[in-house]
Length: 93
Image (cartoon, rainbow, N blue to C red; front, side, top):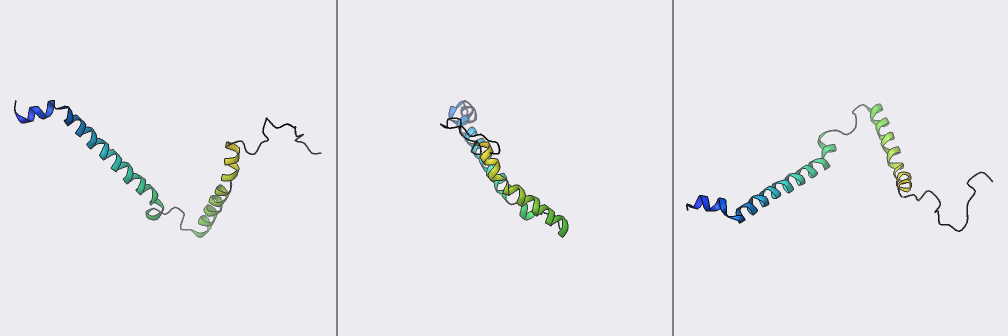
């Protein structure tokens, strides 16, 4: 058999092709991840108008301030545990 036909039948050549595909996928993923981190540098994240930019920054800070409340709500930290030995009324006493 000629050498080019042997390489097609060789099971290791399929492995090399898979490794090449995986390497390309990983490199593409890393490139996309690093590009996504730098989007605010190339493309302005906020408006150039001072009034609109101030409003955007206020909204952003309010959203970031609410992360703790959302985290507590997701993990049910803001509610009493159902296994507490005493019951709380919950209303105005």
